[in-house]
Amino acid sequence: MERLFCFKYKFISLPLFEIVLNCRTKFILPKREVNFPCILYAIVMFEKQEFIISAYKLSQLPKDNLPETILCGRSNVGKSSFINSLFNRRDLAKTSSTPGKTRSINYYKIDDKFYFVDLPGFGYAKTSLKERESWGKLLSEYIKTSKNIKLAFHFIDSRHSPTDLDLQLNELLKFSKIPCIIILNKIDKLTQSELSLSKKRIIEFFPELIQGENLFLYSSTTKKGKKEVTQILSKLFY
Ligand SMILES: Nc1nc2c(ncn2[C@@H]2O[C@H](COP(=O)(O)OP(=O)(O)OP(=O)(O)O)[C@@H](O)[C@H]2O)c(=O)[nH]1
Ligand SMILES: [Mg+2]
Image (tube, rainbow, N blue to C red; front, top):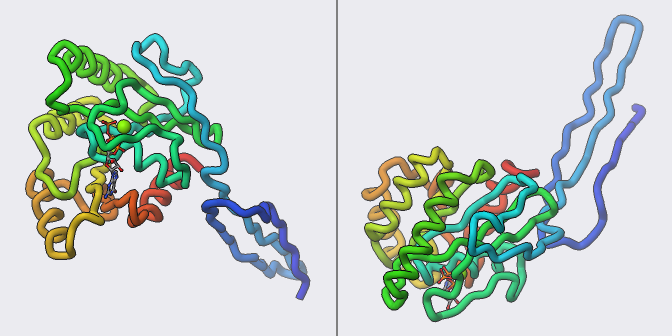
């Protein structure tokens, strides 16, 4: 039997790629045989990651209208570490064990397809009231006005209950009609039974959560959850 394959993929070593295979289909028409080629192609993901800008004002945001995935949540919950772990980079995003490291809206352009936007964390007690007010204003203005946000990853530390500020953020995202995924983070710090309790607790706060749909467990230390998160981004942007 004749075989016709169209290959469109790259043999290069990459952090991650996904192969989609459509099988060759053969239609037998009266007196005529029609062959449809089999198309094998790989979606190359996370090949290019560029830091673009730290914005302190809305007027500084990129103007190319690429879709955005925002990372939001409490200070020190692990948003910037998540970026580094997802892209296998050590210090693409600046992290710190001292809360309050990220103080601006940081844009990372991925594969020229979309932005990862690392937002300043909230709830850091040592920040002055004036500073907190100005960050809060910047954040809520940005979330309310940006037309390019396609998805929000809302990070919550798996060891703790969501705070009032987490509930407010969730409301703001719903109000702004931004699809939201909760990332229950730092799960390497929990035992299996503690993790079960943590999942139960978060679902009590947000009953709409379904694990694998809008709730994911993650650890930047062990990279648990990376495959699932990558699949979400693959469906959205590739
Ligand atoms: N064990 C463990 N530690 C983590 C994990 N993710 C982050 N950390 C640690 O948590 C601390 C804070 O991480 P960051 O990524 O800077 O947190 P952030 O949410 O960006 O914090 P802000 O910039 O203040 O909003 C660092 O010491 C990280 O090494 C994780 O999955 N597991
Ligand atoms: Mg940070």
